[in-house]
Length: 134
Image (cartoon, rainbow, N blue to C red):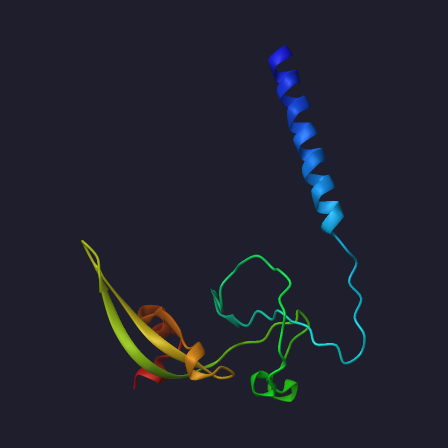
């Protein structure tokens, strides 16, 4: 029991120290009209999620008007997400493993540029969007 108490005490001390480090860096953010901010929107493609997950950290931004997508062209629902629709298949590749082969297709999505096309499983894309393979 003494060992358990000692471990709990040390864990609490460590957590307290980490919290104090975080509290020093934490600050309340306030935005004004016409401020540039990053907005994370998660377009849904069925069960597939668009983009990568990662830590959110402040980044310096240089405003580039060519990267702004007009809000009128995207229908955002109540959950602040929208359905991404595939436009075309740009490429196909087959990845060979020991016992099987996995076919992938490079998909161009409606509100994205060619550089942002993603590799998706061909089998799932054929099920959901058969018109792309005709």
